[in-house]
Length: 259
Ligand SMILES: Nc1ncnc2c1ncn2[C@@H]1O[C@H](COP(=O)(O)OP(=O)(O)OP(=O)(O)O)[C@@H](O)[C@H]1O
Ligand SMILES: [Mg+2]
Image (cartoon, rainbow, N blue to C red; front, side):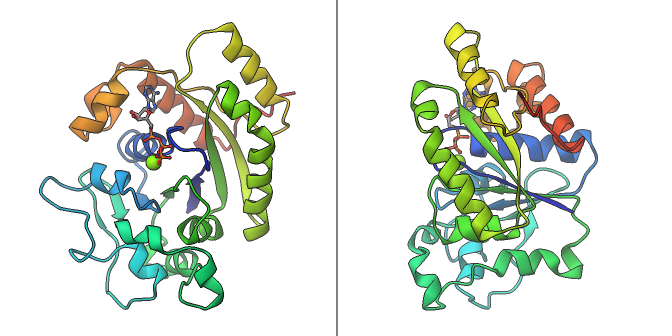
């Protein structure tokens, strides 16, 4: 089992888009069994992978928030709408669980790590965790459970000026889990431009591996409406081809280490 957290404290960098498409490609094209964990109170992954008519809201079934609160709620993993992808759903109460409650033991940030070690769940080949754009209890639980972090990043001036912040984030992540490896940066929403090429070169100089970029492509927005991953809704799109290459790189165990 390989557990990957998709994490960046910056919002809107394609953490969710990457999680759902990588899950679908691993499951359908690579015949892997996949568990997707939604660690974000926005519930985007939960909604994306929920069968039509099934609401992700609190109370209808057990969620990651219940696990963190130690509520004894029974099975928390359920099949998703996509074959061979299971889902550990989120609900909006995840937002209320901040790290400050951990000391008072109200929140169990070891819950996911423990769950994944249970013999009945060790048949998953891959566990992909969609993290929130904030460093809260759910993010900490994700990082404690993960073997590797992939950092989706949009190559713009804001992100690059935030490199110092990103390095701090990475330091904090590895403080939480010393066994955690940074698999690499994944440039997302890329398009051809001199500035972006310079930005990619700057990223490689960070010394961390950099995966091949995912190109910006209109079908990604459409996919959020149709709730079908790109391999179903737009298999020929540039982003779909790039996500296939990303999964290959991930399965082969690495991104380009740069200079
Ligand atoms: N390759 C792409 N081409 C075009 N649009 C994209 C691409 N990747 C992501 N997007 C769009 O960017 C937006 C943000 O993507 P997404 O929700 O995956 O980011 P996120 O990092 O999960 O955001 P949040 O931090 O809010 O959870 C969405 O509208 C999505 O459709
Ligand atoms: Mg998201």
